[in-house]
Image (cartoon, rainbow, N blue to C red; front, side, top):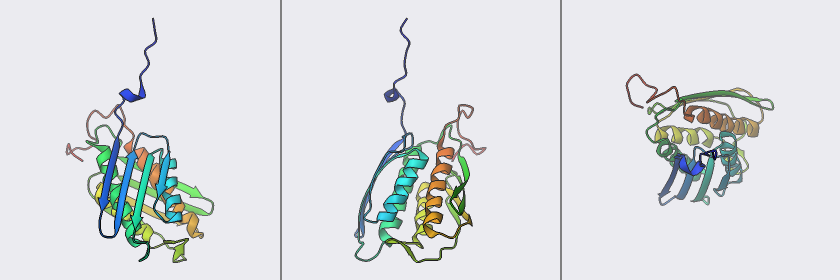
Length: 206
């Protein structure tokens, strides 16, 4: 008897493609929550590309991001609007949220930096962000945009997100630790658990 093999093509993958165009930015994002960490990212901001590539790699998400923004003004619209679209993609890819673990958390070290990230895919947006940066920029990335990026994600994804800097002095390490910690926490929260037969909620909805 031939052994039956399950083709990956037979498994319904959680994928979303979202586009958003305004007078300030033109963004296309494709996100596969069930990927392997492959990415293709071009935002026009080198450090931001590095952060999104790290997010994909450490969350094991396949991610394509293409952004044309008004960088002649500054980096604000490009980073914030990318967060808006990424949050939309996360929400769309999750679909009905059946069987997901819903919660994810991690304490992640990166050299001298230590970052805590915890999230709940509750459908209710809320961000608690606790960090101190000692420089205004890393490359062409304004450090104040870290909070704005995660704020944008929480509100379009419908996510309760806590990010806290527990230690750290190097701004590059602190920020990269946040993106990696967010990736690991989101990966944990989106995993399906066969013990959960419907939604992990007493209300019956997320």
